[in-house]
Image 1: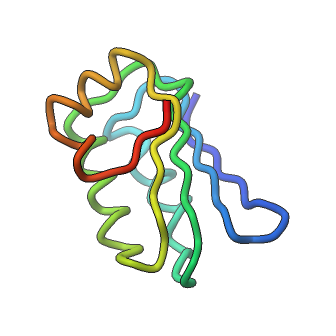
Image 2: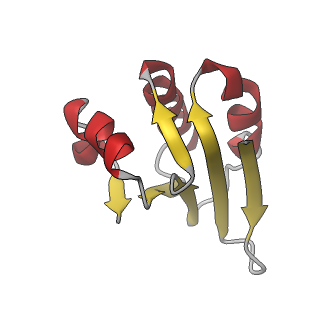
Length: 101
């Protein structure tokens, strides 16, 4: 449970996996997972396949990530389960972020 981050071998992608609850309790570890990213051309994959709960604080954290990287990186939300996808859709995050099911 929690947040893990892994860089690809070529350094161009970072995959952040959020397992369990995506809420205020993972704020520090989520922020730490992307805080060093500032290079152009990076891709950040937020793996939500193991996320079983998402609340408004998680939505805020995704917006903070987007603000942090600006145009320096592409953000892709990957494999959100149906309940998480429902939260993203209700908040119109499917219009703000690329989502890969």
